[in-house]
Length: 177
Image (cartoon, rainbow, N blue to C red; front, side, top):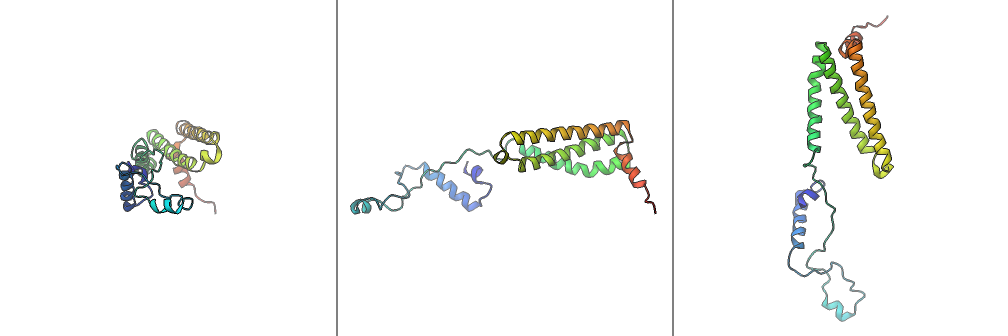
């Protein structure tokens, strides 16, 4: 548990210290406050109380989800796999133009673009800065933009020359001198 809560920014010695703290909470030793108000007590009472306690006070931590669980790791792996697949999809789609290649390029490029912009929106349009409404609107706008981009590329692929044909036409254009 302490490993999960403290794993992000602490080194291994700090995790060992955190485990010691958690283990000391369950010990049977009496709990003594870390800082006693010794200045407010009489001199006799001041001598009988220790200045520093023998145990550590409880500290509250909110429950934290480990990033190793859930769909975040799966999504991260899918993003990396798509990025790697783009290295093969784009050259093959451009060398051998077809509707299947154009469709595969369109879906791959839009997914890559959507996940990248989603990370930007999630990182920079935070509810703590903008409230709860603006981040939801930003994510909704991102979905609309991604769907419109995919629809536009599908329309271009099926009713015009397609992505590969367009790139080939640009490369074939010679500059006027």
